[in-house]
Image: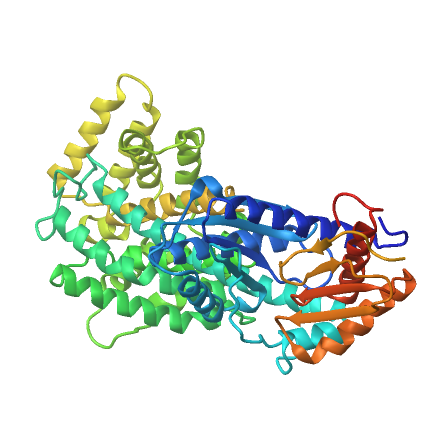
Length: 471
Length: 95
């Protein structure tokens, strides 16, 4: 070895020699080889963030190749990180394409990729000849001269170039994370509605076997409604994820606008039946705030509750105290006028930071689900039933208050408390069946509690899948 | 010194250079051939860089062929030096 030769250059060149050897081994079998690496100026050629970016893009490249039916021989994959950076090498099996065609497709992968200038896909043909595009790529830094020109001339400062690479890579990774988080929130919100309505038996509510106390809706109405809601949940999540205003209250008009659009979609699918208005309101807020906090990587139930409270402030006074629509008093307004604080309904619940969800239902769900890997139907039935009772025992459901009055609401809450006390004993099943029968007989439907159950299950899964399991 | 063996160093990986050395008769002088797949305008720079290494190593009679894939100066120097040493029989193995 040359005296004085930089150790890092030596390692870099040894790594390249090794790459050549690996390529040669594969060439001996007469195959086209495809390699993938990042173009990172300066040293080190890889670190944690480059490696994560490499992995992301490698997955995208493999999907791209598969979609063009360019088949990689999985047994010949070599993938490692050394002094020359992250490196992937593989043989192509029985290609329907020539090496030149494969190179062209890989070039279009690079060109169409948002940060393709840092990606380098090389194709070597069966004879060991690297296929060259013949085109000089522009320098990513100045976007003016060919990259090779700036490299040779050492035209740019390494520290500045690496800063720019790191910035662009982190922006790209962030956009991938945004998409993943928003998609996941939409999936979880839809799941929460499906599991709520499927839960059976439930007191007075529509479930998979029974319409409960309802005559104008059944299980299929809820499935249709859920499908209508599901397509807009991601939009709310994206709004929350990207919201950057100083005052979260500034988000309210747009949030309401999306909510109104979802309501219209719901009514169109249910032929005018209100299945999910409360759920749209509660889940809409929950998705928005969850996305907002997840974007800043500062989600916690406590932060969530304080933001929900700050956003809704004096909601009850603002919305139930004055008329939003001219003409007939709404159910909510009448309830508030007749029952005062007890009749605040869903607005009171959200203004208080959803205590039914965070103080009553979530502890029950943690207890049932935390140690379980997969939440199957049987587990869900037990845990969600228990959580529903916890909510009913606390919730001043304005649906019940409005239709049945204070006395019936109190009786239902007391029965739910008594039933909860028997949870885990031999007596429970009979008591729960009696509660279901009581609601059927009195035609009580705790719809507000059903909405809160869906939100509770959503919040449980946000914690479980996006907070505890993230990265 | 005059190279005795055919030798090579380097790879066709991007940002590298492949250097081949062929022994020539004493007194036939230096011949440096460059084929850069990336840009011809750097041919002279490459030649200067290669000749600097040959000067330092006091190699007067040699045929050197370089196939460049966008290598930087330290890489070019290291690859030329290794190829020369191999051709002189004073370095085995890698680089």
